[in-house]
Image 1 (cartoon, helix red, strand yellow):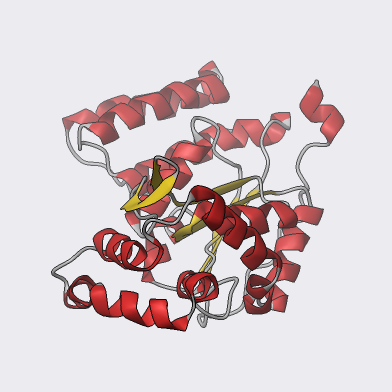
Image 2: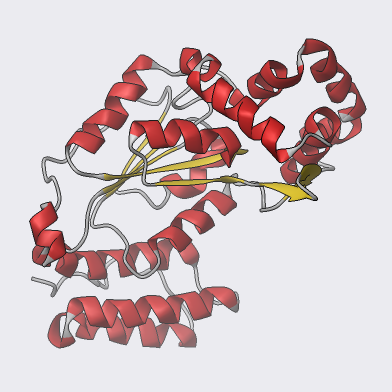
Length: 290
């Protein structure tokens, strides 16, 4: 069943370091696909850390080897990964959350104070994470954790619901109905995304974290801004050594390019219809517990 998993057609590697992966891949079907591909994935992570690996091409092939065996044994589940702003929502939720929390006056004041960094992001002299941190510091900086968590609860239960695209809510629930694992991957703060995601049945939220010091928002980010390559890194980290047999990815912008490159079925808003959802529902709860 696994003989053609690592085809030599369209080979993606070059150089002496690639021999290990190719040889491991050729032996996968002989020595146990799951175990061998799991070791292969560990090797890939080491190579990635030293800058040798080509992350997306090699990861895709390793995933195919591992998941071919896992699908047959019923241990793996299909995953659907969704971007949030612009994909699930009609507009940017971060600015809307800030406005809902501190009002228009402080929002405008914060934009003016953070203007050098916001403009710098547009012209390429400032990265997105720094611009976001300065904007959040100028608008929400100094607020207590309790105040922000309360604002997040109120926002997720009321205003945020008005931004959700009905057809995307239906799509999320269709994946959930089929037993697929749901993961939200967004550059917006996890602060309010986690509340909405839990209500929709998402298993995980991979988003930007805010830093708190002495129980107050410091105006800094506690994690890298979850955009572009960071989205792919966080998603692969979440998979660990157990990647899904099939990955659906939904996005709307170039910030989703890297996670779309990992997808078996990817969809970019305004670029055609959404893919058909695989009929396979994944293992039953009884099968997973055995």
